[in-house]
Length: 222
Ligand SMILES: [Zn+2]
Ligand SMILES: [Zn+2]
Ligand SMILES: [Zn+2]
Ligand SMILES: [Zn+2]
Ligand SMILES: [Zn+2]
Ligand SMILES: [Zn+2]
Image (cartoon, rainbow, N blue to C red; front, side, top):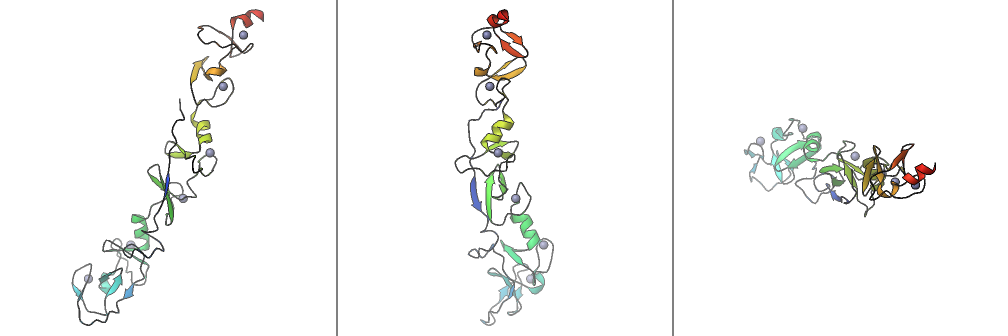
């Protein structure tokens, strides 16, 4: 028996600082590889991969670090990155695919990469456009929040509809106290004599007529 008491909240975060077009954070942003043009002479530059010095003019740069030409490769798959989109994170180089695989969250709904706005909810990441009620595809209202069932978000209406028992009397979902009788579930207020509407509260016995409860008086009268 599900009760609808609490509403889960969720928040929007942005991953654009780790990926995408935000260039304010040099370390995480994609950088076009550039041959270093620093001409301040013979000052040695050291390769971030092998720590050996690089003859100036021969260094490839990503962020504020430099590499040998032949060390300017993806740290995962070894792809030469000189002419590729390159990502640098914590001093390591990544190709586009490997960077995304490691650092860009995937949407729990469509499995696509989330490079812009990201909804964090249910311990997973979602595109804002994918974080919808799984049943009616409606976005969740700001104040409404969402309800969770088996790791899936639902709006309140659909959650109640899906998770709650239906009343045998009125067919509507039961969100508060339910009672079991005649092998079915009922709103307390719906479990009444089908003829006169009298409640059976405090009484042990009732009759069953066509699967519905009926009081003694009404059974005698019929
Ligand atoms: Zn090197
Ligand atoms: Zn790679
Ligand atoms: Zn998605
Ligand atoms: Zn819904
Ligand atoms: Zn009912
Ligand atoms: Zn009755």
